[in-house]
Length: 168
Image (cartoon, rainbow, N blue to C red):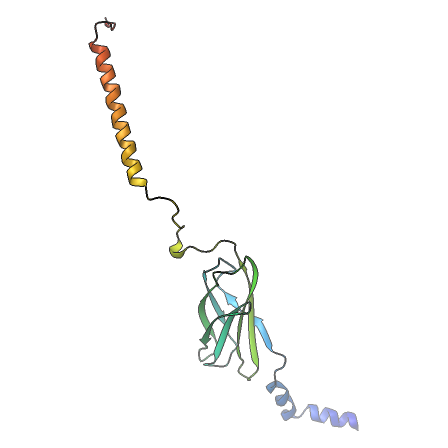
């Protein structure tokens, strides 16, 4: 009789819906990124879904908060955040934390690799050294001109001197 009572309770519609409304533990899934390897100071685009519509989602790099975004009506988001300039090389975790449609906490994670050299602003290497290209180029052209004049003058002296052999 006890078994029959338990089966009857389990088959009741109210019992099943009460179990699905409370989602514990936290819902976890993968966070999508446009890159798997980044340099410190470089932007990365993250995309996720399964959140409550128009709700806040916090993006973290390990434990540091990189930013907050708001989900669309369908519970998805796409945002760009910047990896901290002081991030150490190696494997790190990006996390998006927000509220699921049922009110539970939803957490999306992704592992990224931080490379060892910081990204240069503007995508170019930093300039180190003097801006001496133009003076050095002009000096080189001047030395070539002097050398050419010296060779021409030496040939004229030889061809005009009485000791030089005459071609027959």
